[in-house]
Length: 190
Image (tube, rainbow, N blue to C red):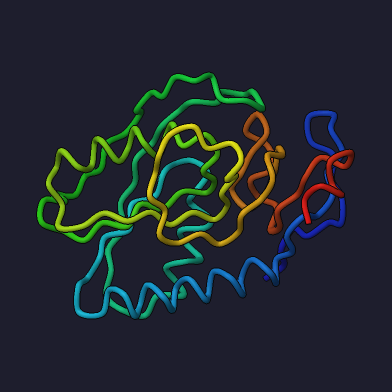
């Protein structure tokens, strides 16, 4: 199988360069998967991905988890086709599973302001799970405006616009196997 791994890519007229390589992604996701295995041994958690961005990360994360687990999805919208959140979250899909009394791991591609994560946390808490934790591929610590407890963070990054590995720019670029940053901001990302 081949992966879409260019050193640079043009998406919607913007030039992007690699920020986090495919090898770095898989190494860190493996570490998080092993930590989840230890933390949830004997508990059979349900991983709930936030669509659309988290589906690739969630698929790879599940392949690194060896304990029994389940999967479901929420679908939210707060970006549309823009590079900046609209500030309003809309729920497009609820989970199908009954999560009452379950150990829930919410899976997000990126947490920046924390708006979407806070929104979902409130919804999930009302369903009375046994526990709720967050895992995110990327966290923009400097951009956080809403308090969200995030137990598992793969990478903390500066407040930059990133693309690839499920993250899009106007629905393009999700199929890239690495994380990219706009070329003019590339030096700020490492």
